[in-house]
Amino acid sequence: MAQYARKLHYSPTGIVLSLGNDLRRPGPLGEEVLIFKEPTETIIVNSATDLKPATAVTRQAVKQFCTDFEGLMFSEGGITPQLLTCVSMGFELVMLRIDASANAQMSQVPDHADTLLIPAVASIFKSEQLLRNEDPALLRDENLDHVRLAQELVEGHQAMLDAIDPLHWGSTARKVQAQQVLYDFCKRVGNNGKSAIDRNRILTLAMTPLRILLGQAAGTAQETKQVIAQVSHQVEAATLARVKEVLDAQAASTLAVPPSSTGTGGLTGAHAPGQKPVPPGAMPVVPVHPKPKRRGASSGRPPTLPK
View 1: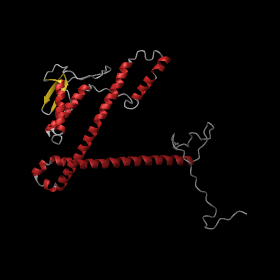
View 2 (view 1 turned 90 degrees about the vertical axis):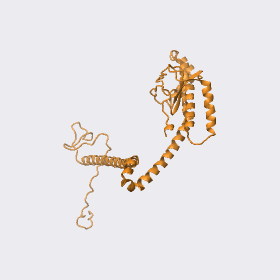
View 3 (view 1 turned 60 degrees about the horizontal axis):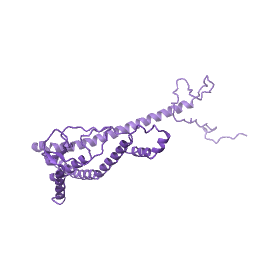
View 4 (view 1 turned 135 degrees about the vertical axis):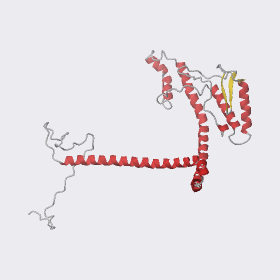
């Protein structure tokens, strides 16, 4: 449904906010905001721009959101366009409040940013006095207030992401559940009605999206089987090659190896001419010597013990 379409951008001004190392603590909203009305969404941005589509008093916009939100919580059911507009307006107000523009430039994520970084910074601050005593110049040129602000912002924005994560998970789960119902419906219609669709030209043309959906699903399954078979063949070939290598090394080790000129007796890296040496790093193979024939075994009589 077109009225459900929600664009991923929140600011049409084209301004890209690159914070870089110039961090700032997000403050309260300004007195005025700019509101952009589009057919399927309402966009709210700060008034610090040359574009002047519709200026609104910020407090009035917040009160209007609260009024609409309260009414929608106890009105008709379903994910209605009115609910989406209200929720998106609330998100945009929060984004302005925490200075999290959708046009902010995404920097490269440092190593171990979500695991070891904050504990490492905390350990430095915990040992700050001792570090100064050991090396007074170590932290002399560091703006520790700026670093503490960065730590505060990391923890704050992570908490905001944690707050909306249940919404993302829940909506994704419900969407997939509904998608499965739709897909099962398409499979029943496409499979049970295949003969009726194939013999009617109008239905054949009209049901093209359905036929493509089911055809792609079958193709994907076939491709998966082919990939599995190919990988199995490669693994089998590699295993046979390793077995052959070990058998060749074993055969070479059973042959007489002449002593080397270095006096090592041919035990280190020596091999007979024309024979394949044992590859470096290969597991040592214990030579298997043939069992000696027992005297009298060929005649069928028990062997005669020496007197």
